[in-house]
Length: 218
Image 1 (spheres, rainbow, N blue to C red):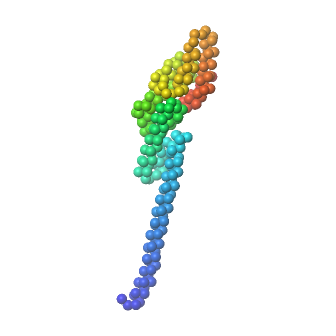
Image 2 (image 1 turned 45 degrees about the horizontal axis):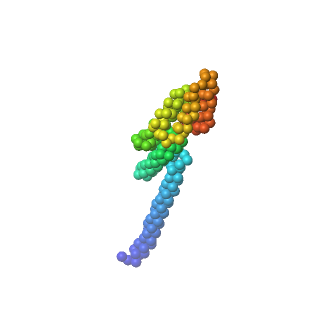
Image 3 (image 1 turned 60 degrees about the vertical axis):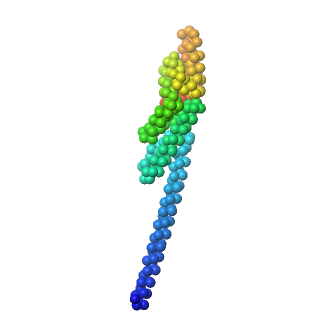
């Protein structure tokens, strides 16, 4: 190879080599940036889906994950973690008699079709939360009867709820209030006492009526 050819090969080779090296560096930087972006996105999603103050927001996020993220493994893993997380919270609430927390989780689970159904099914299968679920449904009947002013029917519903989940503190309390209505009284006194009982339950447990979307009787 004469000097002229060597010169041109050398002259042309250097820019090509530099271009290749530059491409590799740029590609590496892009990959690193994508990795950083993915980490940031993951951190953001994790902080939102494990927000214990808003179960509805958490389940809404995981319902939308497949439309937001193409990484199926990431979607499946995070979704399973979220469902297990709320299931543990539901079991904890049932064990401790925290009816307000259990109602929030179970009500939210009913509002969503996919992951909400998975959570709802888990609640209805687990022995501990299944009892809490039965108690919750009996309480819903009781609240409905209270709305209609049917205190005896309401009392029977809350008695059923107590048999299912005696740990729910509000069940005992509401039942005790309803039992005050069972004392022998005249017809005129009965109506007044009934209104007083309903008013007391409405004041103490307004959140139950709100969660059940029931308007309490006045």
